[in-house]
Image (cartoon, rainbow, N blue to C red; front, side, top):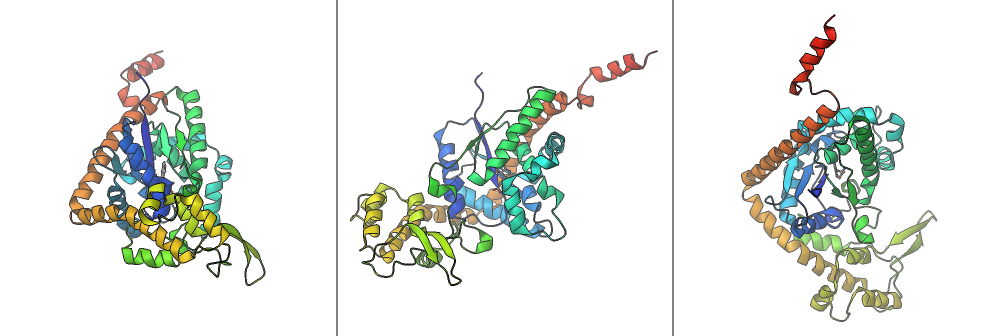
Length: 376
Ligand code: TRP
């Protein structure tokens, strides 16, 4: 039998999902789901991972589980094709992570660049929580419990996938071939790899307050698009505009910037949008050329972007409005998805326990062997 193609991915429920999540992962997941190429798809709401750096704020995580579920379903994830489940409700994940900790050194974990960056940002008072430090190991468990072959994620998750593959090789070499090495599936468009915030800062992130949420109203969206960061030197329409560059800030530092409106157009626009909303140009290259020559104002660019975003978000808003009328049905989706995740997880864990020689009660020869051993 050919190897099954299995997807696993997920998100920490620390807030509502935003456009960065959408271009970086959600849009792709829906395409993958609808491609029919995958035998099983698991999408995990990573509440246990979220608690590794929110231990003192469990209510925040609890509330956002439903927000994320609504975001998933309104974007077009279909429970008939995709199992959406809650991480903490699959205890097999925790067990597997505990075994994996023996296969990874502390020094190896200290080298994880994503964790390093997060530690700098988080500035934990009183030291790094052990659970947070180890979350990449638990992520390896998330992926391998389902024998996932494909993990669609953003670039920042690369170190986790590398670690997962090391753990798989180490496990299989030590205990026998049980686990499957996954491949990462990155967004195919550079602008989607790391969508900047509306202020042009490196990444869209809730703590920076520069997000456009999937659940924003048309009014909120308009306000945010109009305030987006563009070329700070493009003061008159006739002036040549820049897609990126550097400027000198008040303290005299050279600061590199990108023209966020065009980065978003890279991420969202397609040729049909021009025919529909801005027929002066055939495609984004023509529009960019005019902007750089001079004569194209930021207002026109923002209006075009707003039209495109509304076009993409409107069906999502409509589905969300329907879902919000029947929250118990959303809850049922999570419950069913979690049951299926446990069913598959228990199978893998039985194989793991057998390979690791800890399947005492499942091994009918165990007592007999011990009897023989203690005979004198
Ligand atoms: N670390 C991911 C994030 O912050 C969430 C996540 C947890 C995940 N476990 C995973 C992603 C396994 C992919 C595979 O968004």
